[in-house]
Structures are given as C-alpha cells and as structure tokens.
Image 1: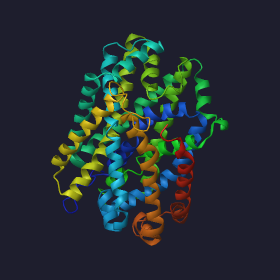
Image 2 (image 1 turned 180 degrees about the vertical axis):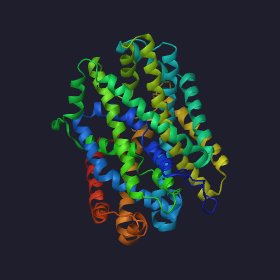
Image 3 (image 1 turned 30 degrees about the vertical axis):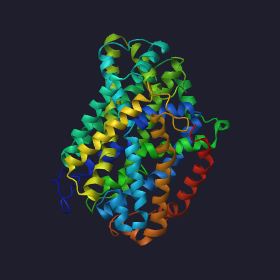
Image 4 (image 1 turned 135 degrees about the vertical axis):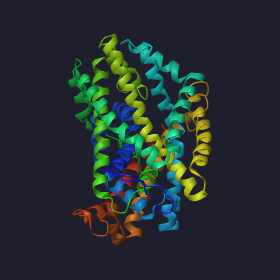
Length: 456
C-alpha cells in the first residue's frame, strides 16, 4: 500500500515496497539484459556462456545483492558514506563504485541514444528491410556519425536528468513503477513472435545447449562480468537505493525478487535475439550491433503496419530498460555529492550531467572520427565498458564480500538482514559462509584466469 514519503534526517525514502522493488529491478534490468547479454552470449559460445552466467547469478548475485542491501539500509548512506561510517579503511570500495558508475555513464547514454534514434527510424520506415548488409549500414552510419548520435545522447541524458532531479519518491520511484511492468509485457509479446520464426529451435539450441569445448577463462570472466553489469552489483547502485529503505523492509525477499526479475528479462531477451539471428542467417557473434540489426529484420517480415508497430514497441522497450538502469547509475554519483559534498540535489545533477555529456561525446566519437585513438588497443567507448565489466565491478564485489564476511561480522550482518530477528532467513548460515569464503574464491579464480584476455 502506498505510504507518504518519509525522511530520515532530511533524506528521501521510498514510499512503498513495490516502488523499491521496481526501482531496484529497473536498475538491474537494462541494456545489460537486452543489448549486451544476447551479443555476449553470441560471441562467447552461446550455451556455455549462459550456464556460467546463471551459475554466477545464483552463487554470487543473490548473496552480493543482499550484502549491498544490508550495508545501504544499515547506514542510510550511499556507497562512499556507508563504508566511511562502518569502517573507513573500506571507503575506497565506495569510491570505486562511484568511479564505476561514472565510467558506465560515459558510454551507457550513447547506447540509450541509439535506442531513441531507432524509435524515430522505425516510425519513418527506414528499417523495413530484412537484408543484413542494409540494416548493418544503417547502424554503422548512425554510430560513426557526429551530430546525430550526440543529439540522441543529449536527449537521453535530459530524460535522466529530469527523473533524478525529481528525487526518490517523485522521480525515480514513480517512473520505475510504470516502466518496469510495461517492459515485461512488451518483451513477452516479442518472445512469442520470435519463436514462431523458421529455425527458431536452432537458436534455442545454440543458446541453451552448452558446448564445453568453448569454455575458457575469458568466457568465464565475460559471464561473471555480465552478471555484475546486469545486476548492478559492485558499483554502488544497490547500496545507494537501499539507503532510502525503511528499517522494516524485508531485504531477503527483495534480494530474491530483483535478481529473479533481472535474469528472466536477460533470458527472454536472448530468446528474442538469438533465434531471430539464426533464422535470418545473421552472425550471432556480430557484436554490439546485433540487436539493432537482427530485430528490425524480424519486424520487416510482419508487414508494414504490424511490423512498424512491433518495431516501435521493441525500441521503446530498450529505451525504457536503459532509462531505468541509467537513473540508478546517475543516482550513485548524485547521492555521493549530496552525502559527501553537501550539494543540493539539483546542483549535483547539473554538475554531474555536464561532465557525463563530455564523456559521452568522447565515447561516441571514438566509434567514428576518433576511432584511431586507442587505449591498450580499445577505443574510448570499449575502454569504459571493459574496465568496469572486467575489473572494477568484480573487484568491488570481491571487497564488499570480504568486508561483510571478515570485518563487519556475522552478528551485525544477521541483525540487519533479519531486521533484528523479526524476518525469517533459514539459510542465513549458508549465505554468510558464501559471503566469507565461497564468493571471494569464485571471483578471484575467475578474475585471475580471465584477466589475461583483457583488454582484447
């Protein structure tokens, strides 16, 4: 039931449990699910990538999300402030999270801008073909351009600014409560359509039947990094959002629901993209452009009216997914400035947005005129992506797990996640064992075996 917004020391809180769940799920469900998951699965062996990804979500995702929920609510502070309050030696973990959010927001709005552009292109009938070369040309023209991608990126950032400037109750919670249900409904419609295409079964086989000969440290690191990216872990988002929770909120059930919703969207997105790519004889390992080339071909087979309608629906879906995630990333940075630098919300949003827009221009230009400028063989866009996915987020998760398991302690953790014994959590001892021993070991092993593949 909706409750009036409350504050603690002037700090916003979520007005309802459903508002928090949709906001947290919105943070997790984003371009990582619909844009990134299908093409990473395609370029990393299909089924073997999916299996490792699911294992990481189950073994790491739930436990780490519960840790972040507990730390944020316990302190009522964003990532940096939370660690400063609990143990100043770990303040760097919060700083790392803000740094990750900054880097991700240096390229994420660019892709969000592509989705807005494709809504317009669909309306104008520019995508009503099934030829891969033609669709690939449309995508390449967009991303290598100058004015067009920057214009759409700017528009995307403005949408984020308006929502985050509204605060938690009036902005983020209200937007997430209608965007998330809409996203699920639209995605289910598209799954049904994709699975009716010829040879869709071959796509499902590629996605769900693992070929273990393709297993490598690089594939495992890509899958683990994708789990972190998709679930918004290790970057401060969940600590920040949970800092706005009331003390009687059930963290355990929320930590089950949010990864479950996120994983469902990722799998459904894969079931839209990969079967369609195989049906149209597109290359499933085509990379970041896969969704923007494959999906329009699906809609082109559905006739000019129905196809255009479904195309608009799909790219609106991508835009919604992107926005629900990027507002959480922007909130990480804004909350840091509010909590640590005593800025007003509107001033923090304004200052952050100017810097991010400059970073996004650089990331966008690196796909075109600035493609000759590289860092360790990668352009600016890919550098921002790979540093966060392969390095800072997994390391952030590692340090959070070590902090909870070895420094915060079992009793404090139990009191927080069980609301001082009022919430039943029969698997608490198992969860804490995972936090203390298993999760750090898994992250370290995958990181060490997979990092030689970075930065390629």
